[in-house]
Length: 77
Image (cartoon, rainbow, N blue to C red; front, side, top):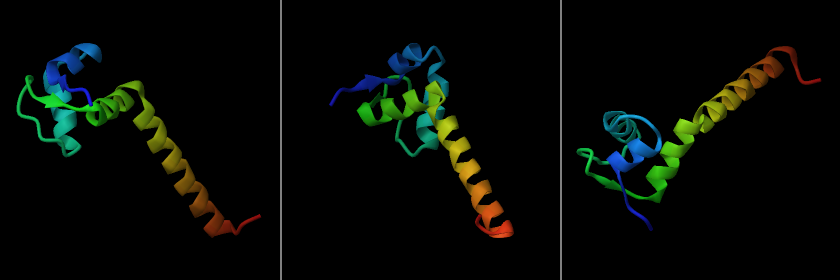
């Protein structure tokens, strides 16, 4: 398992350390400053966020929910 510093990840994703810190904290990871280390799991989560994968998954989930609601309203065909 590799360890990555927050400032290294910020550089990799072309953003500021405070943005990476905020994202990690909002997702329940304990980080204190730009020198904090995180593992592969956290890096993968950030990669998904910055690549738009998280947005794509949220959009698919919303579309599925809308489809389910329509099926309940109009019946399955």
